[in-house]
Length: 55
Image 1 (cartoon, rainbow, N blue to C red):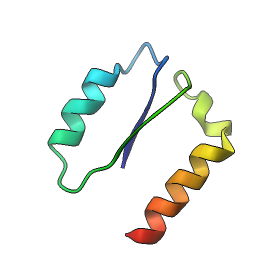
Image 2 (image 1 turned 90 degrees about the vertical axis):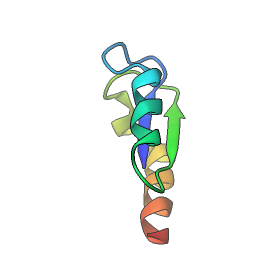
Image 3 (image 1 turned 60 degrees about the vertical axis):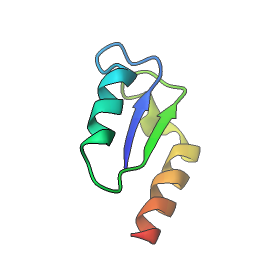
């Protein structure tokens, strides 16, 4: 899984798209955050936990 904040000025979504294309079975998530603010978003953690349960 690769996720990115849509307001992250240091890691554009276009870079995320390149990463996803080069990682087999990769899932992409774009969240409504900037760089690092996602850490405090419980909805995002639910997505990460569900992804890890499936793996």
